[in-house]
Image (cartoon, rainbow, N blue to C red; front, side, top):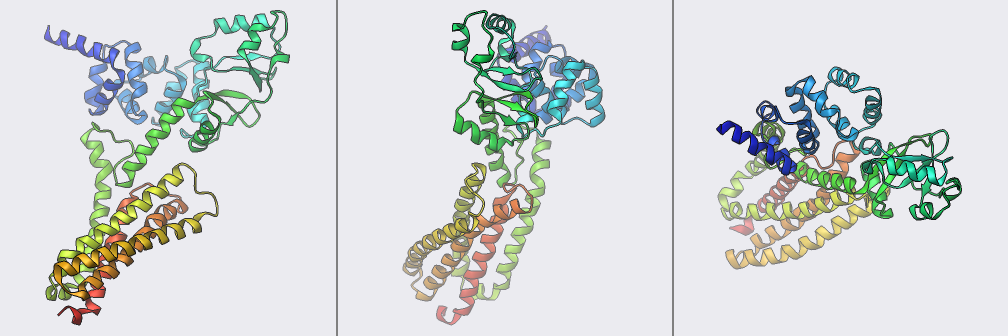
Length: 433
């Protein structure tokens, strides 16, 4: 009886809160989450699967088995189904598509041929379009029979299926029922190619402010539409993913992700960070004798490194934003580096003066104040440049510029900060006696 009550509660939870249910299932290993969904109607499970990360949904469906997978994918929107099937092995994907019906499989295969971060990979293929040779009465009748979820703008296609234009609903309803719709069609319509990237699509949607945009292939055939709110949601998720990758976490991690996923995503970069920390420690070790003679140097080391890290992080975040929003046009790299270098130099000079005065008041030695001031200027200038150069260099190498940029930046600022501070101290050691 207790078990039946718990199942009823979970069923109500899934029905009323599919988003929260998806997050809760993501926090469990697939083999523990799968039994919770057994026995639930596909109408309840489907909305939850659509809100899961596609790779998590694919893993969960694999555990549930091919029969359950087919039952759940069959009513699912083609775009969501394609996103999940992207994460299956080729053999499993082909077997599943062969059991979904010819028309359904054709729609999904259309989506699968485009990368997930392009307009073709994100479009809705279930749309209602009107042939251009209809009368007004026929067009209105067809619209009344069409599912509401397939209606966006009133797209019109020619006799071959190519996008011909768009209809204004007001003009359609005010026209005579016997008139043909062809004279009413507005030929100037903004379209996007199926290969357009997510970032380019977001830029276009911000500029045009459309609710949806039609997606066409290279020959102009209407393939589907992309909705602006969904694209903006994806861009927001990608921005958070970049923030996570900058510090070595996985872009697909969630607050309640399974421990196994968290460890698998973070541990490799923690080892990289450990190796770079040993590099910085080795630099300090080169000046062990100098530190033994002037113990105040050990106290001030974190000050130099910390200011350099903060300066580099400021530059890094601004450059990453410029990349994400496509503000960095071709040929702007030199201007960007000059700007970040000059800003870091001026900030470094101001901070160096304040730091030098504070150290003189604390210690009373002008030499030590001069050493930390000069090293602060050098480290902050280098950090500002490094914060701009590192993501640009990663992008030029074909790597994700967000991937652990802050780890590499910390390495640079620590090594330069320690080397400059302790190096100047070694040169000016007689003045510290």
